[in-house]
Length: 252
Image (cartoon, rainbow, N blue to C red):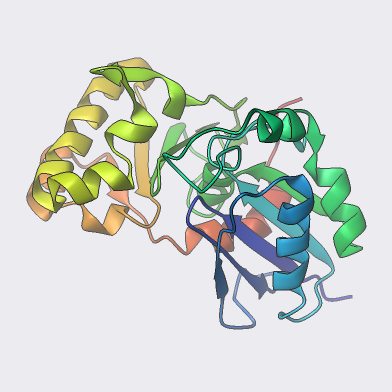
């Protein structure tokens, strides 16, 4: 039996998906739809099912979404609790609706196939890590995503994005899309490098991967100054990683 994987990468601004074969090759052109707001769990599931309906049928599914996800259950998600998207007002009713939502069970039932639900940076990392040493993945998009792998084993998730960094701003805000637009790519790239250098003594990684839609916007001069142990990887890893995620040793 040929195993195919529906992979859906859920972001703050858009949700995209494709179907891949066992080698991680896309069998169809990825489809992207804007993330609808306000979006509670029911609308989330409906949106993903509608997206999947436009793609070939798969034998299993992988979904990456922002926030703290433990064993397929949403502990907290930063964007989907807002009224109209990132940086808009938080709706307490959505906070309550999302908390402890068993996304894996809900999507397994909705898709009708076994489904794996992880943080989006973790799926991204699955597509790029070598499995050797301590590897850190940071995704730069609407906000900041983070995943840590030790010898190819995924570590328990940390919501680094919500930690304060400067001026009362979280990492999510400090190097997120809104600040990139405000600062311009040159100054934003300097800020990204400053964050990388500040995190270096915290993680002491063997390799740092910078992914997400905005990683390609880092200026070459700033990337060069980060060192040879820092690598920019394609944003398509968020889709391709959906296959390798099934073979990852996951936290107990």
